[in-house]
Length: 435
Image 1 (spheres, rainbow, N blue to C red):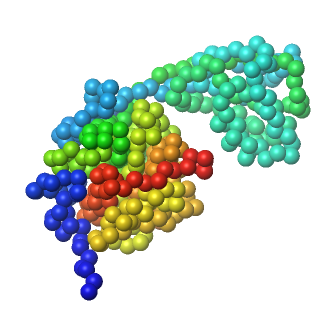
Image 2 (tube, one colour):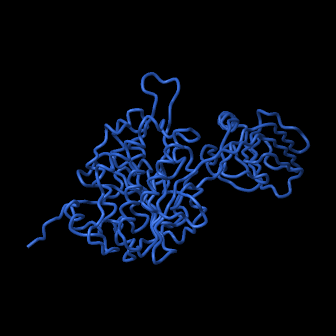
Image 3 (cartoon, rainbow, N blue to C red):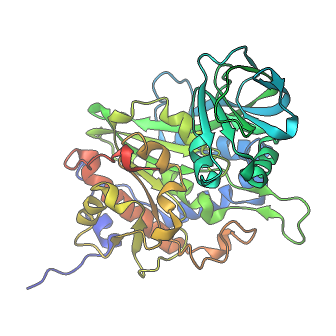
């Protein structure tokens, strides 16, 4: 005789997670879920764009919710506010001389996070070439990620693409640090080898403040961490648009941030110390380059992060039907399979990402941690290929299914049980196989 399938509601009413022996287990409450997401996606938050009063209000709200939950601060911090700077680099004057001849401005470009630098000679500079027969567009991706001192000699056959790249590099760009040593200089030239080089670059640098919101519940195994994260920034107010120009970002990603807050309250209310430490983070600047997750990843030892649940856009029903969610990068670790096992016997199911051509594994904050070997995956339910509200002003709370969202948060809590208790440990991601 087959055992009946329990609904998640019945499961959570009848039992608690194995990490606790509470007589009255905490609940994931739809009313509270609705309150949190309605606040985060309200017009008052102005679309939560970085460097705006709106995102500061959102940060304060999340910090207050973490305080209500009773979360601890991360080690070395005296608040939930993980503040850091990024730098706006505006290109200024640059003079490039090759073999004693000054290169005309239209024939060179610089990529640098320096305030100023000077290379009086070729020594210490790595020289690369882009031949006429090379695919410059393909090679540009590699070039843009190079570190150190680099000179790239580009054949004039690539003049048109070189010009487009130059126009792009003339804009202000952002960097996580000011580096007065490293740069990449590209010169349009027939030369494939040079004898001398002189580079002088002056840029304007402006520091800009950002902040993640972080908290934790310390476990018996303090240095084994299960991480729950979501980004709380969005696109803000777009000037010059007709009609509604406020991008509230309810599904993207107030829904994920709501889940992180709710899960923090849920696990904190257990009343018993978890086996593994649980860390909760609301990332900033996911929509603007992933700077929040990049900074966060530098504050912890990635080898101590056992798993990362990155929660992204869970406000709408999934392609596979009710009570389902999908996981990006399913094949890159055993994380997804362990979640499937954890919800066996309930009505909830986790599936591999049904949109592999969209490269969603690389399009959220999990990718930063995964590149460090962490089993870091995004959990989502939205049908991203047909969603009419993604990155639009119409992404409002009224378009979401609160019952579905609440049930998804319950499923994530259930799925994380064995990882938090130490019964399950996902395999690590192989960073060498990642872009």
